[in-house]
Length: 477
Image (spheres, rainbow, N blue to C red):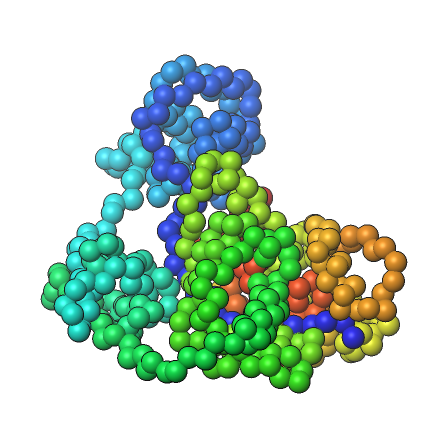
């Protein structure tokens, strides 16, 4: 029987937006483009000066041929020289230059040569001190989360944390530390600018300790098994390190292993292949024969690269981890780009180990249902869904895992297109246009390549948002 995986987890995170760079309109530029279309000039400027133009192709004269020749002049003046004859207005919003075609209004006091810089909203700074309720000392490295479990940050060496909010904005924050009971507090900058959060230490009962060499060996064996089935066996998973393995305890069963109790502490995992640190609060883990089920909450933060070379390697590995993933597939369905993104979808009435190749094609739109809110979708199917991704070959570690899970398979296997199956049963996968799963989808069962990809391949929602932006840009072309 082909090894399969039932997964349910909430991927919750917090990390700063690092996509793109701020645009310096005073930057000195030089270029010489003769008789080139506007679209070509924009792409060359983007590539040469790391700019990012955002526009609707149906509203701009992209095929109009122009000549732009400047030498050592500010970017602001160059853009005015390019856009002014075309009655194109540009606005600097964040790190993007948003282009818009407008008719010239003679009564307008706004010059098209003046970029509209998005005004920063008025904010108030709130200072928060996190204090030990027993000793009165401050607590460093406490984690602060929003009510939706997004990581906001951690307290500094002096136990202090600051956050900027609009004067009318209220936010509910949860303060937690492995040695203290968590506290939730509503922060309201309109009534208070400084807060003191008192955390109560956890009471640990000291029990008698029996040292057993055999028990330690057995725990290590179970932990290694847990690590392979939780992190995975991919090349990315091989570069993951669990910093505090002692926080999990196991029970050995006749079919496999399971957690002795729900974890009270967070597993700290550093992924040196993707450049992330994960904090995983594992609430359930069951390994039964070849079936794996785990559930929990996960927060992401960026690791600091040693140099630019390592940063580029992380970006490259993140793209590879995303391509062909279940999140990539869901985003492609939402944007009607399943085939263009390299996926093929077929269905069968039977599970993969009984189908004998009997699959029939179905339009992927029939597997999609709209949600109640805009941008939300449901992935539904009464059949087993087979998904083939042709954009990338299988990893050799997957072939080893496949042969180990199916000992009757003999001979040398070459990497091929990535094959995955999914069984929704009576359940469904609720997701948004970015491919982010919005429900726990406990009844969803994955087979094949998606079953093999585990926590070592996980990406934060921030990365899904960046990938979504690229998909949306492709749809505009």
